[in-house]
Length: 213
Image (cartoon, rainbow, N blue to C red; front, side):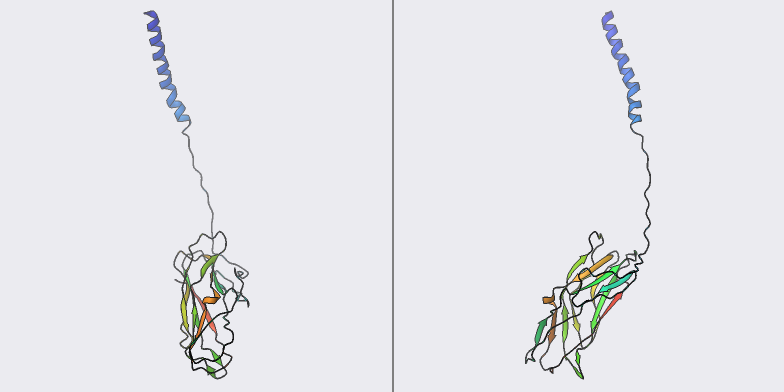
């Protein structure tokens, strides 16, 4: 009996010790604390133009400086063709046709790039009814940019009306950083109706960057 009583007393004593020690041990491993991290971002103010991701041939760099800029625009060369009794549709021969916009305002306000074409003229003659088709290109950016890409639109430029159309559109919260609209030159088309005079025709493309979506 004494042995049993001793064993029982020992077990009870061990349980009491475990009960008293365990909560303290758990509490000792539950200590926590917090700290903070901080960074401040301000509107970008570049002092030199942003280089084109895809340089044009011929060069299309604008030299623009600021927090919202057109960095690169493309000229369009369509070669030489004979006057035809049917409508001519010809592709551009330019290398790396693209437009590029940089937005370092840090506001996420959005923007849109518009383009319009004047009438093709040669001396006192104009290229009647001509239009330029620009395809929806592919959005290219600098490595590491986390912003959502702008929307790239396929557009037709009426060279007679000279109406501006939206080629690139960045909704609020998108299009931040540097973005290029890289187009396939074989998909850039000039359409020339029959009935036009022979000549060396030139048009002017006007690119306008609007600081709102």
